[in-house]
Image (tube, rainbow, N blue to C red; front, top):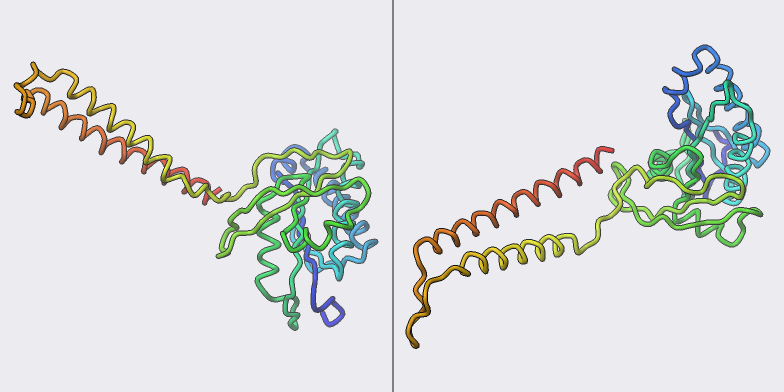
Amino acid sequence: MTTLPQGTVTFVFTDIEGSTALLKRLGDRYADALADHRRLIRQEFGDHGGREIDTQGDAFFFCFGRARDAVAAAVAGQRALARHEWPDGSELRVRMSLHTGEPVLGEEGYVGIDVHRAARICAAGHGGQVLLSATTAALVSSGLPEGVGEVELGEVRLADLDTPERVYQLTIDGLPSEFPPLRTNRDEPLDLGTSIEQRVEQFVMQSIAEAFAGAGPQAPLGQPPRVPKTTKLAAWGAVSLVFLAVAVLVIVVLAVLLVRALF
C-alpha cells in the first residue's frame, strides 16, 4: 500500500445499477458480462493512472493522484461501456462518483471520512451517471475533457454524514444526461413550515367565517351580537377540524421525510 498516492487524492467508486435484475435476465451469461465490465473499467482507469484499491462483486474502488485524470477515466469508462455490445442486447449501466480529499494512508489502505463520502455519493446516483463532489468539481471545472460539461444538482444529505454535500454531474456528449432525482434526501426549503402554517391559517379563517355566517339578527347598537348555541357548536366543530387538519399535515410531512431518509 506504500505505493499508493498520498496527500491530495481523488477517489472513484463504480457500481452496476440493477445487477440482480440483469443476473436474472442473463443467467449464466451474466458471468461473461461481468468479466467484460471489469476488463473495460480496469483498462480505461489504468490507462489514466488509476490505482485499483478494491473490487467487490460488481463494484470498484479506485484512486487517482490528480482529479483531472480521475474525470478523464470516468468519461472514458462510460464511453467504453456504452460502445460495448452486451449479451441479448442488454444494457449494462454503471454509476460512478468522484471525491477529492486528503485521507490518511494506513497499513491496509486509506482511512478517513473522504472514503465514506465518495461511496455515499456513488450510492445516490443512477446507472450511466457520473457524480462529483463540490471539491472535485471545483478542481476540474476549467479543465474538463472535450465534449464534457458540468451541471450542479444541488445540496443533498448523504447517509451517516453530518454535513450536506453539493453534488455535480458530468454531461458527456453522446451519452444520456437526464436522470431521476438523486437517491438521497435533498434539503427541504426552509419555508416548508411557513407553507403549512399559511394553509392552516386559511383553513381556520374560512371555517370561522362559515361558522358565523349564519348568526341571528343584529343586536341593538352598543351590545355585542348574540350568537346562537348552534353557531357556537359550529365554531367548536370548526376548531376541532382545524386541529385534525394540522395533525394530518404533520403526519404526512413526517411520512415523506421518513421515506426519503430510507430510500
